[in-house]
Amino acid sequence: MGLVFGSLVEALRQPTIGGVVAELVLFSVPVWLALFVGLLVGWAWRPRWAADLVCGEKGNSRRDYPQLRSSSSSEFSSGLESHKAQADESTGKATSISSEDGGDGFSVTREDLGYLSQLVEMTDGGREWIQMMDKSLPTMSYKAWRRDPETGPPQYRSRTIFEDAAPETVRDFFWDDEFRMKAKWDDMLIYHKTLEECPKTGTMIVHWVRKFPFFCSDREYIIGRRIWKSDGAYYCVTKSVKNQSIPRKGKPRRVDLYYSSWCIRAVESMRGDGQRTACEVLLFHYEDMGIPWEIAKLGVRQGMWGCVKKVEPGLRAYQAARAAGEPLSPSALLAQITTKVSADELNSLDGGNGELVESQLPEKTQPLGKAIPRFLVIGGAIALACTLDRGLLTKALVCGIARKFARPGR
Figure (cartoon, rainbow, N blue to C red):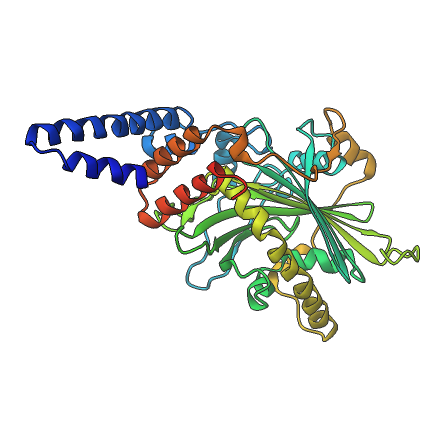
C-alpha cells in the first residue's frame, strides 16, 4: 500500500499538467493490466458453480454425479404420476404412498440400499478416504474422513460409537424430526413437514428448511428416506428427491443434490468388557449447497466437532424421554417400519468395484497458498467476488479467505 500511495504522490508533484497526466497513465496502466490478467486467469480457473450462476438456470447446466444412485427424472416422473399424493394443507397431515411394490420405484429403491452397502463395505470403487478428525468424549468416540471425487462435491464418512445405546433407539433418534426440533440438538433445522408416507415400508418424503449463516440464504430440502434391516444392522437411506407439491422458490434456496445415509449396528463397548452394549453409526454424506467447495470444506472442518458434540447430549435426552414413557412421534413410528433383507440378498445388491483404503492425514500438510501461485489465488478471488454479486460482505469473505491462502504462515 505504501508503494502505491508513494507512486501517486510522486505523480502529483510534477510541475505541469502534461507531466501529471503522463505519470498517472504510467501509474494506472500496470494496475489495470494486472487486474485484467488476474480476472482472465481467475475466470479460467472458475468453479463450475460460478458458471452456472452467470449462465442462469435456464440452460442445460445439469451436472452428472455418478456417486448418487437414483432413478432418472423420467422414471421418477412416471412413478410420481402413478403414485402421486398431494399433501393435505388444511390439516397438515401427510398423505399415504400407495404402491403395489411396497414403495420400490417411488423415491428410495433397493438400488439405493445396494449403494449404501457398498459404502459401508468400502467397495464402491471411489477414491480413498483421508482422515480429518479423531475425537472422543467419555461416552462417545468420533472419527471422520473426506474424499474429493472427480465430479461433484466433497464426500464425508464418519464413524461414531455411542456407549450404552441400543441400535433401535439410535435409529429412531435420527429419524425423529419432531424431537430434533424440540430438543434443538440440530439447531440448523427450522422447519419440517412429512409430505407423503408409506405405511407398508415406512418410506417417507419430507420437506426440510435449514438455517444458514446470515450472509447465505436458508436451504430447502425435499428428502426421500427409508430403512432396511439385515442381520441386526439398520441401513437408513436419505437422499434428495423431486416432489411437485412443493414449488421451487427463490428463497429458501432448493438443494437438488443431497445424500446422507447411515448404517446403525451394535458393537462391543469401548470399555473392553466384551459386551455389545455400544452402538456404531457409519454416516455417509454429501450435498451441493451452492457454496464454493473449498470454502465449504473449510467451514465443515472448523465446525464439525462443535456440531457432533451436540448429538451425544441429544441422544441421552432422547433415551431419558423414552424411559419416561413419552409417546413416539409420527416420524419415530415410521422408523420402526423396516424392510428385512437377508445377508445373501444384501451381498447380491453389493456389486462392488474393489476395496478401498483409509489413509491418515500427515502431521504437517503443505498450505494451499504454497501449492497455488499467489497471483492465481488473488485473481480467482476477484473473479469469484465479481461473479457472486451478493453484496460487500460476501465479497469481503471471499477475498479475505483468498488473502489467508495467499499468505501462508502469517
